[in-house]
Image (cartoon, rainbow, N blue to C red; front, side, top):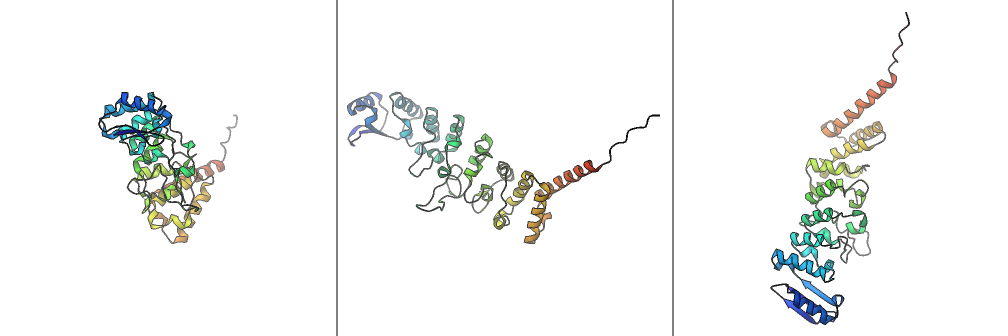
Length: 290
């Protein structure tokens, strides 16, 4: 369905079954130009080929196709809109990027078109209650699941990480109250696979150990990956290791049960021993001339 009205709301064109280009042009002329009309179009009611032709036609006559609500379109139509120059950085009235509500297929096309995440701010990732610093969503709009805004969409997360648009430089933009890796093995955020959890934590080049959260039952599995990366990214590995050991002792927990953490400690302990041995080993004596 497509309808065209002038700026006063007068209906100039309406067609439920096809995109009639001649009638559309006639309506635009009567309105005094493309800037004097409002178009409502539901591209999904038309055959795919006709919808694509309709998008290209609207662009040809100078209509801003970014006025179309891309997030209400089917994924294939959304992809075509992006290919035809739809504004990937368009925001809704609450500052939420429109593409954040799009299907994964549309997001992939945005990445193909060179989506620059640096053009979005923290306010575009998260919504706030009026006159309050409280977040409405705990997960970035770009990563939230359509079924539950406080759960991570694993496919979106993996796509953003693998494509490099979620990286160490902008990771903090994706963080709400706490870093995202505290949400990915809990009742919030869902249960990521070990592979994806490790992939996520490796994005960060600095790990925050939040003591009142790290040993929360909801982080039972994630804490192993968090401690591993914390040690790996610390300049002083030995101090980091002692810090981790101290945290386990403080909680009365057995660190030996955390295999990944123990393997990381063993790796850097061995390196420290080897380095110490290398520095203290006696130099090879020169052979005396006979």
